[in-house]
Image (cartoon, rainbow, N blue to C red; front, top):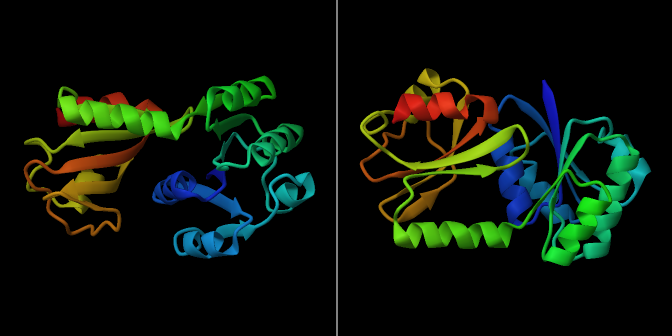
Length: 216
């Protein structure tokens, strides 16, 4: 089973960790805030309170030699940078790091982050696309191997239960959906998809095209 670590459990990190936990992936989630760790532990077995700037602490919970680590530390730029440096020293391969501005992002890239993401900018682009209503399918990179796919329910999905959809398309999981103006993240497998529902799936990159071809 593949292991992905998520460091930092603010809104972005929490959502990513919870969404990954629905896939066939072992997730290690860490934060220095005990309350946040307690909240994510409802969904993830391997959740720890620790100082992510400590190589020893990271190694003790298994965050070394991993293929993918996502660093979602908020306003503490120093902690973000030192965490990425520690992860590189521990031979973690693909480090995806959240940045709060372009300077922060440039530093993260120079010290070894494989990819830098700007959640606020992503959210802004999503809002613009929603307002102009010209995009019916949207793909958002979570890591180099995982994507979020957002689309409006069409005839291939309407009137289907979530369990039926996930059984038919085995390599995807429904992470959230919007129905009648409300978002839902606690997914009931017996929920029947309605016309105009907005669905957000988590999918491995290699299966995205096949899934979209199947549901279009």
